[in-house]
Length: 116
Image (tube, rainbow, N blue to C red; front, side, top):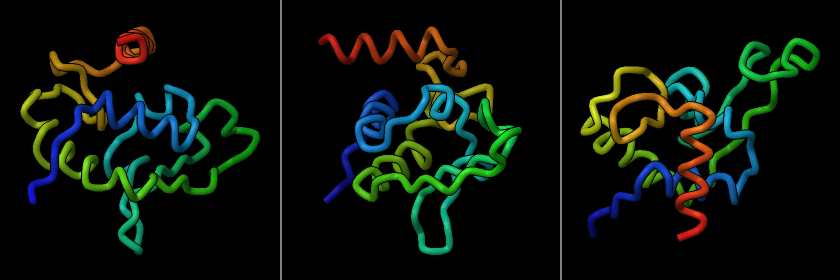
């Protein structure tokens, strides 16, 4: 059975419902830096002190494990679908035009899919 591809807006929306995060966290995810696969094969978000607003005061955050139900969709996005948009940046999520999400564009994406 083939894995069904879900768009990045569905992955990010699903992730927000499973682990509530600031939109900046998703917007600035970078594969191999803040989004990594750990030794157990789980996808995790890792933040060092420079990766979040209060990092200077609190230091490195504990890893946030992404829900295993999202692994196949995230891997399909990273392995196939993201490249088709020809992004001009190294962030995990990209807009359909290949540009990175900004705070306003990510907010509009969430509003658009939430009120359909």
